[in-house]
Length: 515
Image: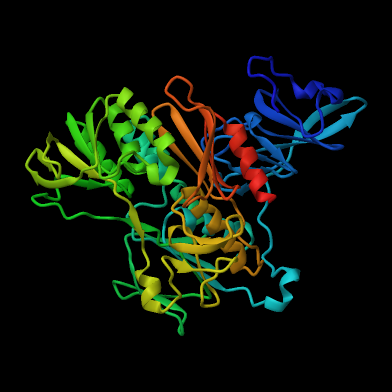
């Protein structure tokens, strides 16, 4: 546990009493004006930067697991030995310092060098499955999974040709932010790209934007773009993500209807919001509710229309559904549930229940579908997603899939699952990259996502499509906002949603990992 935030920060240059730091303990201090955490594991002491490189979360409020530290906000994981960002959503390392124990004190000395790229070799424990390292890798998809894979390939020492082909016009960006801070107007444009343009050139990543792959030739090991250009590959990662479900609404024009999936989508909504006074959001999903919260932050009146009886009831149950409805209503959102939009005529939005709403524009957030067409045409095994094994390899050797399109054998639920979570996509991209290089690392991460609604964040670990019990610990109301909801089936914990309990969320994740 970290020290209380009000306590003065010790200067680790002057030493810290070993007796004041129990095994597994963590204390926040400083070194040369930098905030640093000092961690003890048995007889070893580690000093590392105290701020997560993802969204700058306080690692001192996180969890130490072995020789790693995990961020309380979005569960990034860092090595305490080297500072390397071991698991997304953080991609950049934290700093580390050498620690020397002298008598009964631990002194933090010089800063250590950042971890260097490793040399790519086939793991010695995979001899029976060993294959030559590919000389070229093509990644189809420019989202979180694709970028995380490219980043990990270079970190793991892959020195061959690396091409990332994206249908998007923008380089990989922070997709979760599009419906949150960016749409609310509190995050500028330059926060959204995940990497600078120099990053791709420095690492020799050929980023091909605004281009769709039209076909995959498995025998020739090549992909062809819609413009006719072809790229050969030694290994391929399919990370094509998902596309919004699009509704056909009588009378609606393209100028009135907006979806939110891409950076361009979010910017278009921001532009419309500049002069808007009323907006109708169709769908009480995570995207729909986050859009509603962001537009309310801009002072826009918001009506949410959805066919279900409660927001997110299918995903999180009626208790959180009622809480979220009350939270949004307390911020001025008006819900129209058990109905949907049947017609749009100018500014008039007619509901199937007969009501009529006024709107400057309409945002549709009614779910997404995985982009499977490329894999289906190529003959890869499909089962409500691209079927992959524990190493994220498809039915064709050397072709992998990650992110929203992949359905994998989840060791925690014992089922094959496909989830549409940003952190899962990035972590799958990282593991797929290692397995492209022959490391045979199974994907065992516990699914995690977060959702932001005004000043309330919901963290969710695990995966529960169905459950027979949802046990609430704490206060799930507008006054309390401090709880954990545990979803169980036949007495087995499948998932836990937490509000204002970041450390418990991390502990739950670690417990699920250990079985």
